[in-house]
Length: 219
Image (cartoon, rainbow, N blue to C red):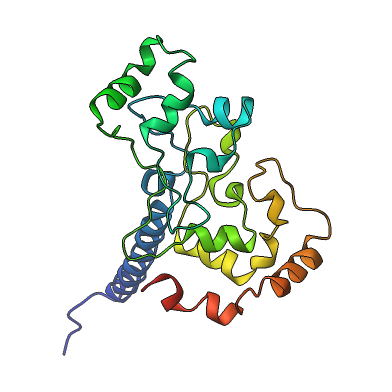
């Protein structure tokens, strides 16, 4: 019986198959890269706010402690958004006629919350507790970056699960003296591995198995 297909058809079939596999892998790689890009993670992107509050001015230049505004960071799962009364403690006197602070004054007069735009947003399927991290010696800048240098605050890290897992696998690298938790300029010393290990023992940091267990963050 005569051959129906030309011999080159075998090459074309193999080439088509391998091309499909290659293009599928390339597409998957592109999708994964896109999912980790700032376009989706919102990393390093400043958000427009109703009032362009500057952490650099307040926390950096004026040296206001994080806890003055974020009062629940040591006792609650959330750091807390300060009420307008906190702003007015200063701005009833300082810059009390500045036009760009009118939304703050209006909020105070009408007892209506300012609609701040959330910058660090985790999925509802992920559980995060500020108080446990702070009490164990994880500093604000470890997760939030140098907010004392941010005119407009932005998300300094990806907040992807891989980023959390990397820290939970090696928490010693992030532990600092408790009196340095709110110091935005703190730098890890050369012997951080040893000091972090000692802190982990003293503060009863859970094992890597427990810290990386699914149920630790997904409840």
